[in-house]
Amino acid sequence: MTDLAFPDGFLWGAATAAHQVEGNNDGSDWWDWERRPGTPCVDRSDLAIDHYRRFPDDIALLASLGLTAYRFSVEWARVEPADGAFDEVQLDHYRAVADAAIATGLIPVVTLYHFSLPRWVAAQGGWLWGGTPGRLARYADRVVRALGDRVRWWCTLNEPGIVAFGGYLGALNFPPGRKDLRSWESATAGLVEGHRQTLRAIHDAAPSARAGQTHQMMEWDSDESGRPFVEWMRRRNEDVFLEASADDDFVGVQTYTRVLVRLNPALSLALRGLLRVPPLLALVIPPVIRVQAQNPAPPIPPGTHRTQMGYEFRPEALAATVRRVAGLLPGKDIIVTEHGVATADDAERVELIDRGLRALHAEIAAGAPVRGYIHWSAFDNFEWALGYRMQFGLIGVDRATQERIVRPSARFLGEIALANRLPAAPA
Ligand code: BGC
Image (tube, rainbow, N blue to C red; front, side, top):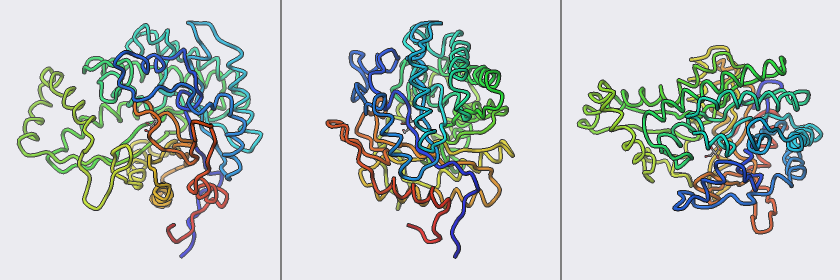
């Protein structure tokens, strides 16, 4: 048996997002959402893991593992705290973050919008406001002009499907807490337009930049009973954004699990009927999806188990989505911009990385142009409405002391990165 080698120049990284790690992101819609009376959030982000101040040590720690890339996000609410008012001090801050990465040998991969909006954008309706796409592009222009001499890799929007599904159909307790089909559709259209304008802004400001969206994708598994529903859902939640990636320089793939859809015959028949009558669908689908999404125990196959998130533990789901992207957008570069697991048992994270990378390697061997693997997450952090209980980190954090605790999975991924290969025998 020979080792599984990855292509030369493969990016090996770990990711964070500003609101989840920086702390005190108090000009954003998420900050307000966490504080709303009767908030659906189990925790407030507060100081998070204080990455805003601790970034030099955090980045040095990631580099010491052997990784070659660090994906982080710039916080729009900090850079543009009021409409058209840009804060040069904050731009300097993010320049320093990129420089810290570069100085330690990490390639920065920078996300411009990762779920949190400035309060003033949210006040206008967030993604329902016609001004949001243009404002995002204007902010992107400023950031790329400030950092473009040192950053080549840019993610425009992180998981727009989750933003629309979570906050406008109400499936995930995300702001602004809208819960209807029309809001979902309008937000989707706004996000697509936001991506298009932002992509253009990045290329105008830095013609050699490599830019793309990152996509939340599931491995969908359905029999005949669930197929029409799966197709309907995938079209609206994934494909609409993938189509908008046709001009991107790369596609970011982010996959956490597989979804099994097996419907009883009566429900399947009713859904098929409903899918042909859009007005009825508009009434019925939102509550059904909300109930389904909140269901702590969606079906999983026998012999598998659940993660802290309640998902099926399914490392290979990543290969299924990479294969799908390679088929839909032939020849387009792919970067796994997130893959990870929330677990209290770090051995499970090692297993996820090992099995996920073996499956990914098989896709590369079959011709998928995968250019990198970035793990979610570098550190335990603020998991949105689910707060700090979810442990996604290669590196644990004791939030009382802010001590960082390097887990074996971090060393495991670092060794793979250093060798640019996986040993032939599974971990
Ligand atoms: C998001 C992250 C999130 C992770 C784990 C992705 O949907 O980009 O912000 O923490 O998944 O749920």
